[in-house]
Image 1 (cartoon, rainbow, N blue to C red):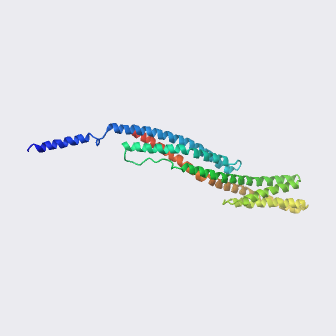
Image 2: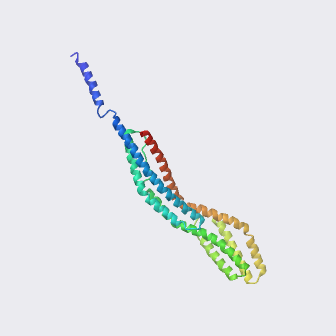
Length: 289
């Protein structure tokens, strides 16, 4: 009986050692395998994120080109914005593969590093499709915006050409040009937008058209005094015309930028998230190594 306790103690220790050598003990080969798997999956995820980044950069460039056309008013912006929408929608397939790759990497990483924050994909399902829808919707509004920007320039050009026609004594041409100016002016005046500085241009443009119309009417009546007074009134608008030109540029720049601001901001946010996640993946690969 005296020797039983030491024997039991030895048996307990031995059993503990045997248990320690089983599934509960650290397994270097398992840890190594998990790390190698993490390195492999990080490489796959990074490659997919790089491909997604490349596709979205092209989409952003197209969207920015469309936004610039909105402000300039020279070319229709819709084609570029619709192209951006198509490119963004097409990138959704790569985004889905990237999300799956990041989740698979996170599962492998937790096998050798169970603690720490989870790796989050850069896009949610349907997010790029939503951005593409926004870009498509902006295309129609942007075209209208660019058309109105063009009409503001057409008003000024028509008034200038009407004055040239008066210099040559062609009253019919002057009337026709003023009618064109008035038509473009009315389109802009009836445009249902809230642009803070646009009324400055509207007031001055209306005054310019009216002044030249009075000149034409006075000349038609052979009323030289009234013609001279109307011409002086037009000349007095020169300083206001410069202010009005700045006002319409500001209005179109701010309003035009607002047309595409939301989808461009969202695309920029996705690209920023891709860059951050790729940096994190590089750290994961370094830690696994």
